[in-house]
Image (cartoon, rainbow, N blue to C red; front, side, top):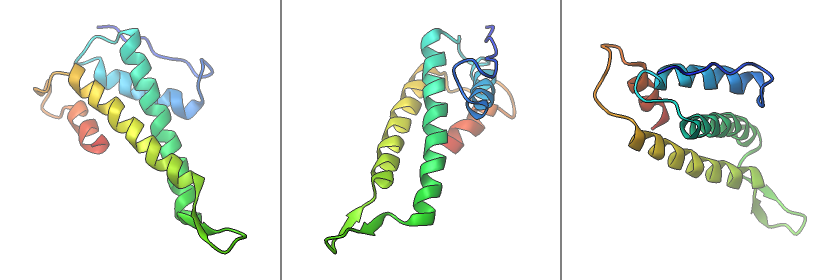
Length: 118
């Protein structure tokens, strides 16, 4: 199973490409990296990086703000963060369905990744 590395500047930021290549290395030990799997992994990477940015914003600014009317309103970034987590859960579920669950190695990197994502 040959997973071709993605180069920086090839439709992604440096952070996206580095994380995608890391996930490709992990998953190619278990499953064939088809264009669909590559797309799922890239979507997962994008969701994770966006989640990290939104979480930082929410941590710094809170989940609500006071509108000019005097009422508290939910920040759009908070809603984006919640929606992003739902997308991430759906992507991880699809990847889990495609992946056999018996460990390949003693220190299986996919098991470590699963523990972090779930």
